[in-house]
Image (cartoon, rainbow, N blue to C red; front, side, top):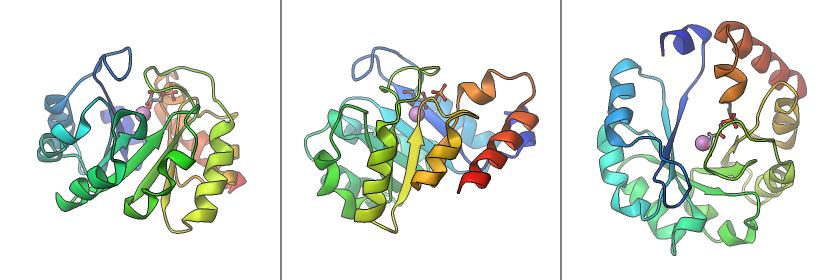
Length: 197
Ligand SMILES: O=C(CO)[C@H](O)[C@H](O)COP(=O)(O)O
Ligand SMILES: [Co+2]
């Protein structure tokens, strides 16, 4: 965390995985609360879990500023987005690369953020899937003021295409954590993103 903060990242994206919605387990509310104690940066909590509606209050109490649910995990996206907003948090909806954008179009008016996954949710370190870029362009056309986030395989080679397509929030895992020097990694990523936007 100290090294990340020194590198000047603008928010923390926290990947919550339940071993059911995705075949991997990461962490839950106590770790989100621990991050909350260490920083005032926005905590952007990516809920890769089933029944997210049962946990949003606890994640918000733990310190989540934004909670993003997966459309594939729930029946009624719009109503859960409304519940998240009623807690005073930002509400995001995510879709995996194989999920058509049509799945969430009706819910977009309730969303503060749309997350276009450029890998299948579940693991860091996967290869960037450019299908997310076309979805970003379409979301931008449908909802010009919505925050658009991209997540998965974003690195120095792919980040320019993300900003060019219209992504506002660029989630980077391996391309920072896999580097010895976070300051240089973040500076180079920010430069590549800005050059293309
Ligand atoms: O939600 C995620 C995986 O499900 C991660 O946020 C994402 O994969 C970031 O890691 P990387 O930049 O290494 O792909
Ligand atoms: Co994520």
